[in-house]
Image 1 (cartoon, protein in one colour):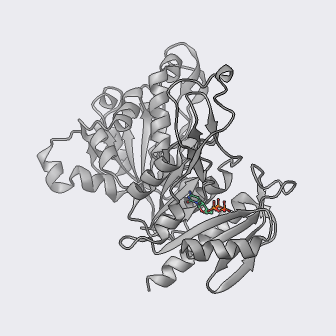
Image 2: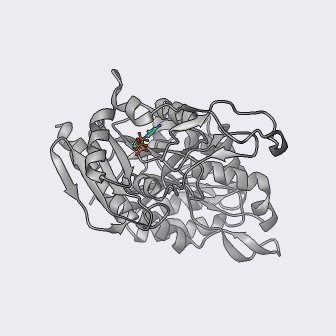
Image 3: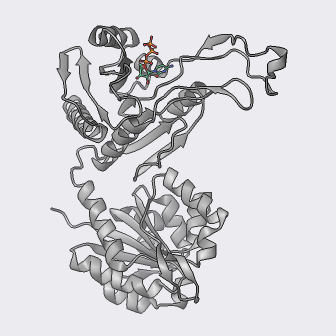
Length: 403
Ligand code: CTP
């Protein structure tokens, strides 16, 4: 197995001293590190101690011509398999969340094409501040990974959440990340996944929706990412957190899902798992419809765009493999196969969503994969397992098609 390496970005917090222990712990596990020490971090520990432990140069400033000639910030940010930010201060969370790059650390964070693991460390009130929580949510939606913070006594004398995760926990998270991605069969592939329901507004307080939980689509996105794919998940409204290592674009309506999906192209494959509303109200009223005026006795509907159909029939830039889902309640295989042919996708995953199966919103699924070559039925299993097997089939198919 090739040696993995991390680029450690050390921010300015009292927990910076723990990063020295982290470097040693990673090294004991056979993981090499290079480090960037921010100027605030250098108030707590020295480049000399960092460099001595990594056994490599400790990078400290953006406009250092020697370093730029030796290894520019772009190269630095891409030479590692994973970026680890520890301690991740409020400042180091804010810059990448807002797209700010004004020093070496923040530039490396924006220039990288590798996953980033943040280990936040700050005072409990800072951690709870809505601005910090907003930035954390944005970074998670961009696919960032997080470890900690934990709860406990803090250097500032207060108690609560904000303590940086212990170095061994951060090293565990790094190792788990590498182990999860060890398959690598989808390295270098970009895959778009749609998931969840769509909400089609009637007026400012009401909408049309369906019972989709998004669980199957989110599990597929997570499995594809674990196999090394760069995944863009276009999600309707769900209760689910963005899966680790997945860039999530949150939308409300079918039309927004269509726009976001097309914007996410080019992609090697697309998996349309979303339960897109087929219709939307013809008119979305600006004001709440009042019942005494009899306004809601009927709603005129118009058809929404069909994303799977549009993707499958693209003349230019069609993903090599387009996978659809067919949620049916009767004559399942026959209806699903007709749908596959009508929409022009390569595979369709058919499942029974009739009342009593518990599929809609549940944790299990019984599916049949239909393609030009035939059909294959899988036993009832957790949605996460369906996702893992489907991701594996997608990897095999893409690898077969590109050789
Ligand atoms: N789909 C889509 N955009 C739509 C409707 C459906 O991308 N506007 C996709 C779904 O994500 C799924 C597949 O098409 O992959 C089938 O969805 P389904 O709702 O079962 O099919 P419909 O076309 O709506 O057919 P029907 O409602 O008649 O069964």
